[in-house]
Length: 150
Image (tube, rainbow, N blue to C red; front, top):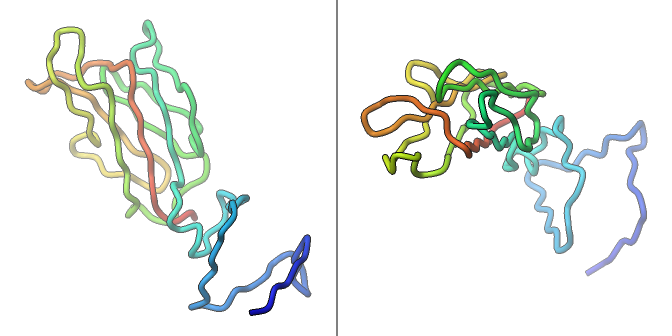
């Protein structure tokens, strides 16, 4: 087996290096710099968005931390729209949501994509409600998205 040691690879006509389809790349180290606009097959399996929301922050919901999120819209109690900074290629992405499991009344809650809405290339809507369907704000709401970038 041959070993090539270099500090940088650059394409002969610019900064793009093409790796032929079907080529397997094995990384025994740490892969870095899979930028948000990277749409190659190695990046397609990476999370394209995540968000951690404080939905019960004393009145105004806030974003604790996020990746590829330009923010949230508070649509009312227990109802938020999350907006991506960089859009997805299509609306067929996988969106997952979760939150803390109980409210102050020890009533089990659920966190879900808002009824009657589907994710778009730029947003998704999430809601939190108790067993009887009453929406309420939750201290901890999290979401993530997998899919292709536009």
